[in-house]
Length: 124
Image (cartoon, rainbow, N blue to C red; front, side, top):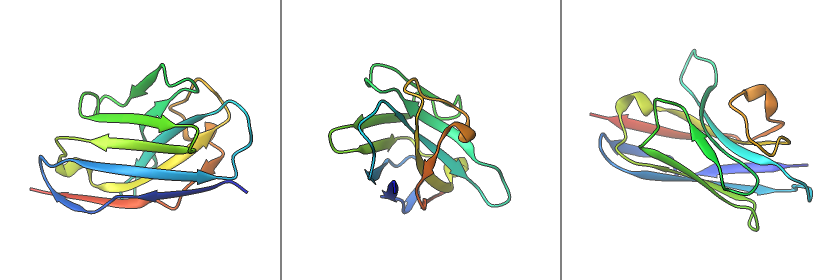
């Protein structure tokens, strides 16, 4: 009964910043990791970022490294994605997800729960 709800997506201009929020509920007391993926029409899920259980390690897709920052507040079961210097190619539906693997993962199949997604559109 894990539920994830993303919010914060909207239409923005290239170069702008945006922060996405994912609120989770129903998570068991266990180690886990959270991640962000995105999907454009006709394409598969693309890994964006993940953060480990302690928050001491996070990693990103090369396409967003240096621009996006993932953070998590495990007490609130909430994960954030701060997106800076947005580009048109960042346009996609962004999904947050929860994985039972505490180290995090870039594989969508390692995530058991997904949100409904939030649309981010970046125009030039």
